Image (cartoon, rainbow, N blue to C red):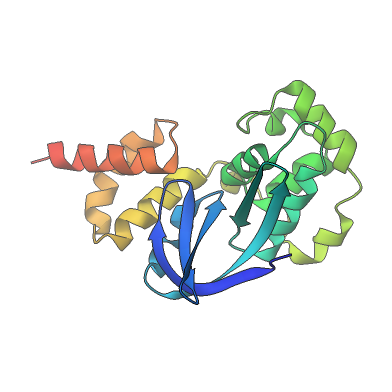
Length: 199
């Protein structure tokens, strides 16, 4: 198993990172690649999961080992593959996801992309009571304010800051962006379009 990749972050794409290590460019799929945007062209250490099947191999990367462990737990759920697990991680913080599972909060789980009532029940059935080993790695369960956050929008705003846009410019479009439900790269394109329209 490849535990982590340490190298120079040479590209951040909508679905993956490219990290160059020892002359090899590793394509690493992530829940939110834009969380790494501030480390572009710098050395990074990315915890990874090497997913191997007969017809394919992929590296999945994470911001923390906690996120990776939850990804691996989700892979044990019947009906959830890597794509589904990444979509869940992209839409919520690990502590919120775990709290929802332990509290059997189907209403929260079905908000995640690709998770219907049947899948939410399966997640609870397969994982409730089996996440105790993650407790020391997590912060206390989030309150209402945190649950209202939009990780995709936050990542998009962070990426725009890294590109040189100042807070004053971002504040002008943030309210309009909050009214929309988009992926991180779509938020970035939308924000750029809105800022170009403004005098």
